[in-house]
Length: 193
Image 1: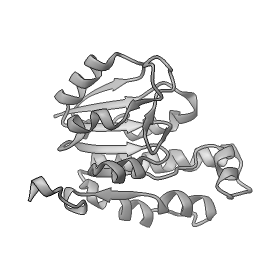
Image 2 (image 1 turned 180 degrees about the horizontal axis):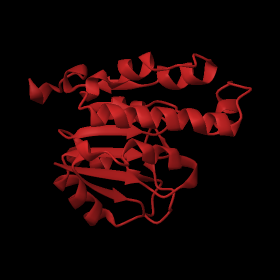
Image 3 (image 1 turned 180 degrees about the vertical axis):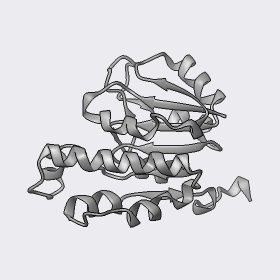
């Protein structure tokens, strides 16, 4: 089993590395932390069984924070044919919306507050950066454990929500945006009937 991690180097999302570090259940792991070019990226996606995409994003995809690809997103609609049929985890702001818009199955986060300014923008006040980072690290560690235990992706949202041990505005917001989509969750196009 091969797992491709697309997690561009960025100190503001370092906590997310806890999702895949020291997780033998992921098999042969390769991490992309810098722009490698379209052809190489596409080939790596094709070769992998599992795709884990982490970082900053928007409804259009996973942002290219290196600015080396010549476009805003390193993963976007162009990659959908390669991603469909894979075990996919998308953990970036609005990954869930990307999945819905593109009928992509897997486990996804919605707007995820990982920085104090994001909390303020979402109307969630009173949480300092150190606390926000600590909560992000807790979730990443919990995802790692679910992966290590072989829990099916479809169970991730509910399992993680049940592990929310703080129940404050920040954690309720973050956990509330977690979702899993199966191919059956999306309507079939007329040519698929």
